[in-house]
Image (cartoon, rainbow, N blue to C red; front, side, top):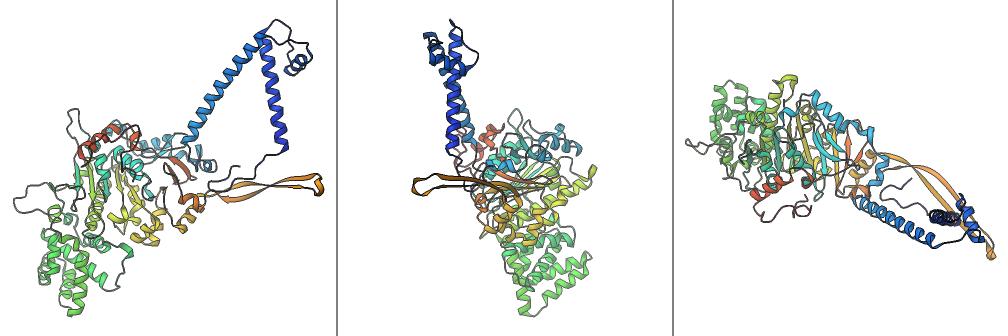
Length: 604
């Protein structure tokens, strides 16, 4: 068997016996060619046995002629042409192969991975009621989410019940071959997050589904309080529109509590829970009063205004919450400062001057539209949420908008036939650890899949996921994912060792050769022994140096398999993406695609 990627080659098989066999082959070929040339030349009786003819030619019983020379030359030329074509085809195929492709013989092939192939995924889509009748464009993939192709070129998909977890290191092509195709080919509503503007610029025009006159038929919404894409706030979304009771207020406060550091942050066992609960109290009060969310921050920094919130809670029949808030207003100074100071830190993203127009009306004459999440989902529109990590991040607001959109979609699904969205929704959470710090996401993963809400969570490393969700929730997220993809460029030895173990083992035949020469110039001895060992298909080194253009796919109920990536420039909508870059990218002055290459800087 062939050695697995990264392993040393087996001992060479060369030896005297191979030279003898090679000599016999050359002799047989020469005899056959000579015999064929003489037979074609004609003019004399030639035996039907090529070897007998060679003996007769050597003994003079058969004469070599000029015609035989011509035929031999023609056959040699034809053989050389055929051999040249064969070498060219072989070299072309070899140039497209990756060093890990040899491992595919030990992984899932054919019927082993039938559940992610076109026939099975199409049947699944039909059983869920997803048909071509709802396709918004000719290039829309109605049967599922595109993953790539097998090494033989057969397309592979995730179904509309599958949830996805991807781990890709930087510069491995996750945007070009995974996120952008998924967004472009989604049949229904899309929510996409990122900390740059690349995915937005590539897919914005595509998701507008323009008509024959060039007019958009579906709205694209871009939430951009940090000016990542320099989008103007021509619309707004009120986070408090999501809050209908104390439970939802607590959910929203939890996202602010996760903040910038997630599980990596050092939490105070008293002040952090108290500060988060205080924030939930104020959020509920402002939601009940119909106030903008920025009022919550105003009440935190001017503590006496907390009495306004107490009155609102009493008025709307939340007496126990009102009492808890009133108690926090009357704690001893040091205790109150700690609680209120913690809540202020959690809500600091609300204080930015550029944030307010995105989350609240600017005044009584503000006629900008407010994002209706239910309408956006039902109309199959697209929402991009942009945020940078670090100072000034609005990550909690992006997480809040993501949560509100998915929970709204869940409510629509609950009221729909079969308890599922009529047309599936795709949530492509790129840079999830930096942009969407949603602690409850692992718990909800499998549930969303049953509702037709397909979530694609993309992380740069395993430890990055642990930093957001924690160790056990990250393992839950992994086990709840029907589609789990490793894209390479991760250098965490413990994780890679675990992944290598998950990929499985194979039986390898090892060959031991000993060759010794006797003393005094005497004869030598040579022995060959073969034994079988059970070894990992991949080593941690193989996975750390995983080549670009290949994915390692773990799918539910199937053995792992290697896939080829299919970048957007090999898709039927490549021209639309090029047009989108020309219209929306701030520096698109040259054609985006030239001679089949990706545009510069598009290898994320």
